[in-house]
Amino acid sequence: MSAITPHTDPSVNLQKHDTFALHSLLAFISSLVLIIFIGSRIQRYDLTLGLLVTEIVFIALPAGLVLRRHRQNLDVPVFARPKAKQLFLTALIGLCAATIAVYKGVVSRHGLTGVDLSGANTLGSLSIPLIILLMIVAPLCEEFFFRTMLQNSLNRIWSNRTSVLATAIFFGLYHLNLLRFTETFILGFFSGIVFLKTRNLWCAVLLHVTCNALGPTLLQHAPQLGLLLNPGMCIGLTIAAVVSCYYLGPKSPPTVKGLWQRFRWSMFGTPESLLKPPTGSRRITILAWSIGLLLFLLLGYALFVTLARSGMNTLQARLNAQMVRFNYVVTENDTWTILASEQVSARSELFIKKSPKPYQDLNITLPFKNATLQSVKIGNQEIPFSHIKESDYRIVLSGQPELTPTHPLIILWHFPFTMLTALPDGYRTPLKSLAPSDYLSLDIAVAENSGFRLLWNKGNPTQRVVYITPEKIRMDYGSCGLGIEKEKTPQR
Image (cartoon, rainbow, N blue to C red; front, side, top):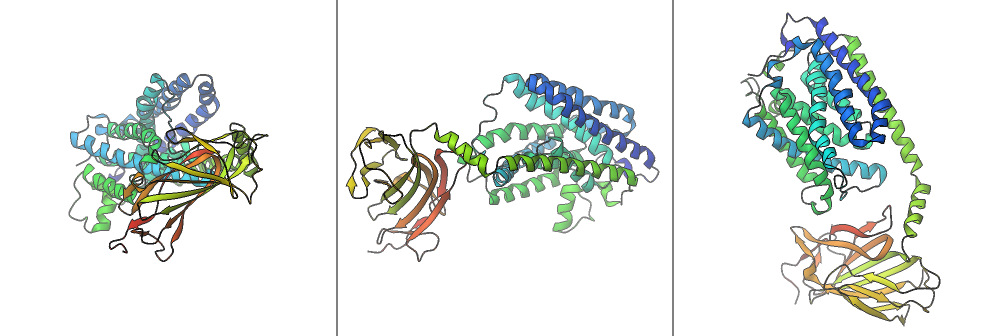
């Protein structure tokens, strides 16, 4: 049995619990103000020093003062040594939460800003003291603040579900970045569940440490983790996390039967939660949700202004700035045809968006090691080229006719089908333009009697599987499923 939460005792003094919640919310506001007006300035001066001051002085200290004032409301197990089973299940939940948070965070930020942060190395440039702060000090101080103080106080006047969700929302908004709200909310939600089920601070800290350690690694390797970071896998991980939460706390009583009832128990159940908790004073409820709403509106306005400033004009300015880095910038349309000889015949049309005057030689890189360049043309005119090394070629454009939208640079090349990576539902391939580009499209065609067919739209011999407009000039576009499969009985 877990420690009995005070709000289930009929003789409990609700006024004391209201005061505890009120002091916790005031500490939340005070901490937020100190971070915005003082902590952020210290961090701009010295990031390591600023984070240390923020976590210890502006987060842990206010929580410590409130808890000292209301020490009679602390449950005994909060600081006790956790059991091995609790640590194992908490680490498993942390793995699931980190993966779900990274996937949903990448998707939401890309949807809001158009920026794909997958592949970013967020820890590569950080010093060891800063990494220690982020991995150990920050989880310890923040969980002490949000679980031991805030969630603990709200749980005495609200139901388990309301207190967990409210604390998760406050935790997400507390980071003062709506673009990261999805990740921080998911972390705060699962951390709140772990604290609710175990009533142990160290388990919540372990989950926070796990997410902080795995999150940046998963984000950096997201382009290579397509089989892990996807909706289906996240649904599976959510189910795994729910099952782990079910076994994390005390065994459910016989009255909890049925799938839905067990789901509710796994998330928000304690032995005392079957009793209807008393309701705290209305002023506490109004104050809490007013703080959350005000924070959300302020951050929403800041996000709106940020997105408005980075509209189409700014995007075009960024593209122009990127173009300055390259002699040539192209828009590329590729068509790959799967042949019977298990060769892929590729045709690339390069529309020149930026070029030196007069023309200089154009260096291109074929995306596969064993790819071979066959010919280069402008209209019907052959253009000379030379092989530099491996997949690098130089096209001689000096003295050639002007390239126009109706006369792009046409490059014919081929590569072995074995260069593609087989998947259960098709094939995966790297997407790379031959030269720095601001746009890339790829059509897949299957030749007759090739032994292959399109995975989708089987009646059509050609399928457009990729259509990309990036934020900046690039050559590497990640990878995609080609959408083809081997025929079970190839035509003869």
